[in-house]
Image (cartoon, rainbow, N blue to C red):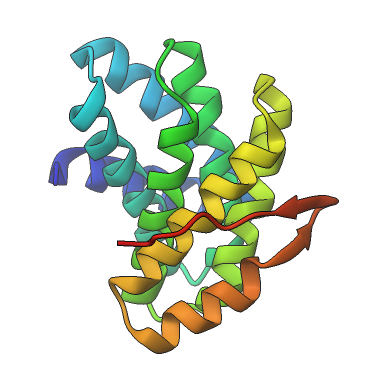
Length: 183
């Protein structure tokens, strides 16, 4: 984990939320902007890209929680920001959506947020982000739901059930198909 990127994003989120009181757009802009800058600066691909996405999203959640902001809105904005940022630099996007959801659920658990709400918002954000950058919305929703359940699996069995219930069915007009296995 790159403390520098995570802390930088956390600080940006804290400043932005304190300045505007708005979480969703702060997360979209902070996440996409940081990813573009970082990926262009480091040429991150594969595992390095996954790690960068995780650090950026973890920072967004931590910063939002620090100022008492809506962690669900930060999760939604974060997962909208990931495809925007990664597409701009030509990186693989569907995989990053799954990693994003996994990270967001784990980070939300760290700060004591409602995992069902965060997971559902993450899937909604994935659908919105996919529409904005021209990705297949069903694939993005499925990747987000599957990633969210994987993240919950790293928290507890109860978290898995809570997240699975939240991401199953139709979300934002898209039938969400969860892909097994979750290991």
